[in-house]
Image 1 (cartoon, rainbow, N blue to C red):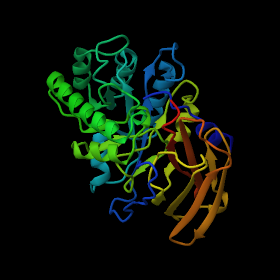
Image 2 (cartoon, rainbow, N blue to C red; image 1 turned 180 degrees about the horizontal axis):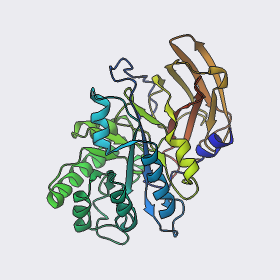
Image 3 (cartoon, rainbow, N blue to C red; image 1 turned 90 degrees about the vertical axis):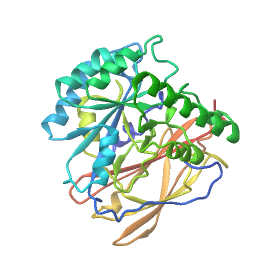
Length: 356
């Protein structure tokens, strides 16, 4: 219990749906590759103790890579992981390492370790900051590409887009994607296929803009495991930092399984109403020990009800016991073990646009 409580209080210090939407997200769980899963991790700074909330020590990062090696994970870029999920290749333990923002510490301390273990990674860059301050320049980014690093798009300004009202927000976001893609193509001669929402914040129209721009996947900041039924334009990732990146904690996260969600209602991330939103989640019942189901609310307490439980699926509702309106970002998280002892994980992000 203590492990799960610790994990869900991870702060969103870095780097769907429309406000008020009551849409229901339906996920295709009938894929022929439905056994495949991908655990994805997000890092920012490496060996830079000035910023502990976004930093991982070099020692711990190497321990993570060593764990993946010893436990026979295949490590892929995000784009290759999407191809893997869609392919008929055999199911394997699979991990993705993503790095947001493009700090120099990645180039100087993180990349050499990835090379040592022959692992690729996906690096999301903000084109406005390339070459400034603590950020890698275009020469370093070009060098990283030659060393098995996929370059992804993290917008131009890395702004809080949800702070703008709908029409302004979407126009600005679309223009930034077009600008950043054009700059990356000019400098690196590539067109990134992977996108990362700044601060993990987005709405339904922003997600559509990313998809229409030709990207094949986008990452958010809610934790969880990607599976064949995941909406690939809001892929979950487990954040890594000094507080939560100890080798044993990394190993626990790497062992998590996806809670195979079929429907979510409402299908949006924007907080509205009294600040105690009710979330309905329908997920597959595959040898799960439903009586041991737990739910958590970041910074608060969670209540849940099991509405339906049968051999095929389980329907639950969950709600914070107190208002989360004072927080910018809050996670609702559901965990449940299966009969083999593995824990299955799902989290949903709420964003209060009014908290600046």
